[in-house]
Image (tube, rainbow, N blue to C red):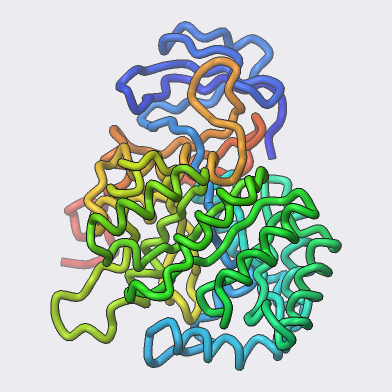
Length: 418
């Protein structure tokens, strides 16, 4: 971790300018034309050949499940198979194991540039508060990034059968969870589940972050129920709806009507391409749906549309690097976004959805920055090189360098004989 004033020299911005950026006291102090920045009293860092961006934020992670793919196979590859496999496995996990994997996953996110991470942590039978406590410990020790923890309640939450899960969710908030989470579409009473979550979040003054409609079929549509409930209650602490997959399968008029409700309610939506491309559509023999939410419809309605990586090498998504540039690249490929719109979804829109202050490469902005070796944003998404420098709260918190050695054509130079 490097503290003190910094001068980031000769960086390329996404708008094509080459600049020197002075960072001091956690903020961007000055942005000057390249070669004119005042280096006095600073640590000067040469960023020639690097693109300097507002740092991305990972809006939807599962640190407690991360890196478990080899231990928890999901032969079916679908959502039900992943849930079944995970529920059978998680009782065996100790808090120490959960902390170890969560820290490793967080290091991956940070090394790739995410200086803020919102993660879910499972509650429920066989895991109790163990995963939450492990992830809270990782949050409290995290010096290189901001971590928010959503207590992810088990279902059901409603009725007599949900009493234990409601108590666990209340205990999780008392233990320090930052947001209330659940999956109302899996509850026998989705509207009642939403009502419980809103009331509990309001009582604790924390945001609501729900898994919503993570399936292709249009019913049940808990997104519309959520929008109606938030509008009716005037819930003031921020609401994020993750997945919203079925919205992308609806008739445009129906999707547009629901999107307008979501916008009026002030609900943000997180598109999660990795996991939904992996899980969804396996029952389609041809013309397989892409499993993404209705990106254009939501944006046209004025909804904040963020994007995140979701699962990281676990039974819900067996690949992934913990890299927001990978998420953005998938929005370009599978969602037909431009590179600019895609990166905005994993940076500015993700920070807004998490309730974090905006970041720009301009004086007065928080110094949350990512420098990646590339000549344009398109190239950065295309290559996703590991060669990066990450700044959080004005400090260098991660730096990865990649050196390529091209062997000489002369055989003797590369260990061969004639």
